[in-house]
Length: 228
Length: 207
View (cartoon, rainbow over the protein chains, first blue to last red):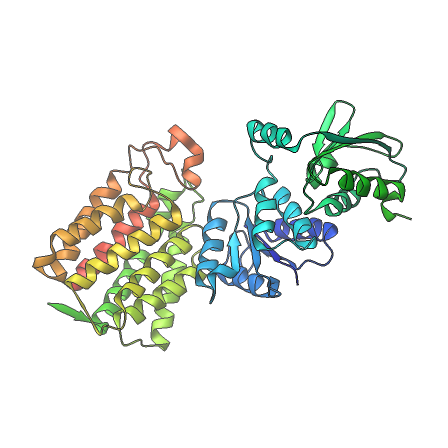
């Protein structure tokens, strides 16, 4: 039983697009679109959002993301009016990045709080100071150089597989390509590296489960992200 | 002095009438700083409220306010839907099952509505929103508690008018108008205006 997601947007097309993208990353998560007015047109509609929340809830609760101003108000009002308001939560996160990160976290079995956190952290994952502190606490890093041999490189689906492979592990994972580096827990960050077939990436992990995390990434790369 | 459910229903009908008559004005106010739809949205909402009142007849003030809330929530688009919906819903909840609305209840309901709007919209006095009209209105209704509901509502409407006017020189800090920054100065906030209109309608109905 996984946490469901609802994308609340002023535009039906926008919310459907977000769902399309998120479902790619998380095939078993209920991701519902709640965009536009019920009679068509731009706006957010209480009934539309309420129905989406009810459909998205498989029993583990729902995380709602929104685009602009009144979408947040409508989403919050819907949550407040649920028989159990604690079963759903509205998160302040970028809609696209947040939905993708939340979907991956939900696919990996995270609870409502974990899914919400994944969405919120999608914007940039904390301040530089927090990151430095986290890395210092993590101690010695484990590194591996890996060559991508799968056809599409570190594109959406492989990036999502990578994030899922290390989800929930006690390790900070970073992926480097040349001078660029990406948080191994962020699908969007990994995709933004633009790593293609034939590129050599460096995976660097620290923390108690660093070696295991690197091992899982290596295994994924070596079997071409199960592409074939 | 207190009023019954039928008086509350009358006040709601008066409010719908005032919104219908000021539909164009509200939309014009919304044009330079917003989506140019506030009047249309509010009118759509209150037209639906009238239609609902024709088919259902709640027997308590709270029941009537709840009808207004749920209808506005689903029929008014934009931010005004959830904001007014929350205001009327919290006001309704604060009244419980009382069959009559008295001076004390009026203040309680207005304050609950204000708190709902503040919580939902995260706006404070000075942000150029409906809070600038509603907040002084609640204070005025409280100050006039000994004078009866009609006088309280009249005082609230006066304070709301003044509060709405106070948004003109302000920089909008919430909603679509806030995107304009300094350029939002010089405009009367449409939400503050509609709040003042609603309170004036209630006051006139109570006279």
